[in-house]
Length: 186
Image (cartoon, rainbow, N blue to C red; front, side, top):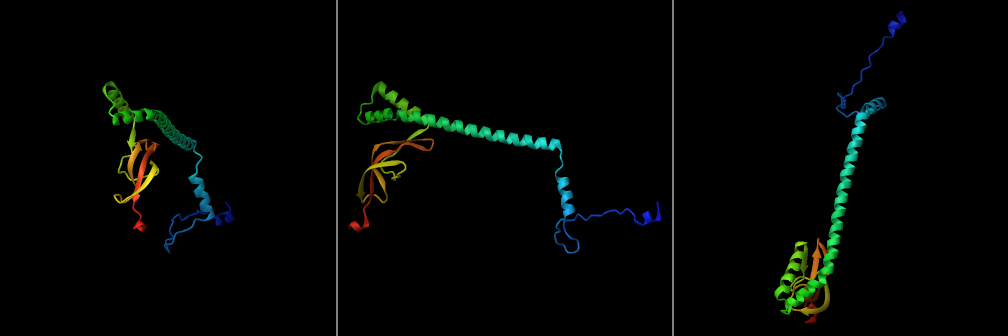
């Protein structure tokens, strides 16, 4: 080597990668060269890592698909059962009327009770009794009166019970409603 070459020695580049400045204690912001080297080291083109990430993403998509299909099947099943049960409502009404008039006896009584037990086991629940608070989303009012005996809108007579299945009203109860006496009527 020549003397000129020796004067220009290959220098070792030292880079301080500390995130805090040791003198001031303030956070450092990376320079352009440091950002470029950091991005190169952060995103290696490792095919195994890429394929693993793709596999994990596909597994998550499939799990979500399976959950959605199961939820749709359950909804379709509930809708089918609700439609079938709604077709049985006139029969249940006839059984109730026969029981009220004392005409449900013998073999017909056991058939009626078995049918009511079956629809109850499937999840259909009757609602609407005298004394219930009036709820316009669950009750259909066909008459209205004022009464000093109630403090809020109340069902006083139930002409036809309502039914619900899986949290949805299949048929609203048909009722007569009483409201408290108006204050200005005195």
